[in-house]
Image 1 (cartoon, rainbow, N blue to C red):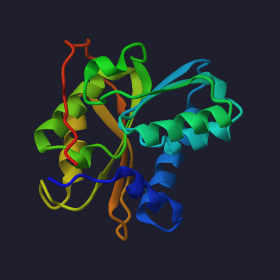
Image 2: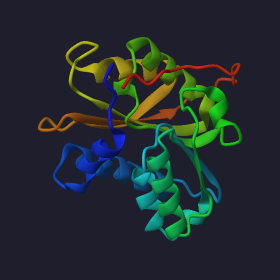
Image 3: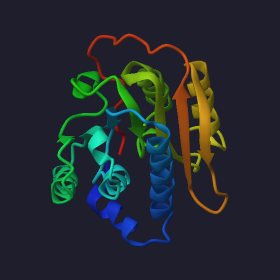
Image 4: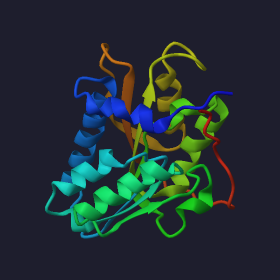
Length: 215
């Protein structure tokens, strides 16, 4: 089975007009809004399958209040993880931890949850429907009260019905989240969603694998 060259895949971000670049800007806009909305002196962020981490790190690098944020980035690709760690170091983001660990394992998040912002960007479209459903459910274990979950999904329908995000948005509603943002431009292949936890967080379950990345 062929696997994706994720370093080559990230090269599309170098084109400011690409769908990936537009998606990143949409995600960053939501991160900026979230930081502006939260006056807390200390905030926790976790990012699953974070790649080079620039969706979060570029925002922190340009903000004077970045010291409020402690972040855990989970990425298994050695080169991408090194790029994220290098960017954080170059910009003085001393509270960013880049961990080479499987984001589909609950124990990979040890010490960083419950988080105030849970990022599952670039994840759901690379999972089976069963694992995508399980991932939405597990975010309630990773989230602090009132936390925001920020997610993305491509709109191509290779595994589910014509608009795969309909299922995802429904799953978040079933698990006690309110939708606060949904960006779905008709001329692009991406969707960006944000859901805030309204129900009580779910107690952490046993250490387990809740998703397996497919490609």
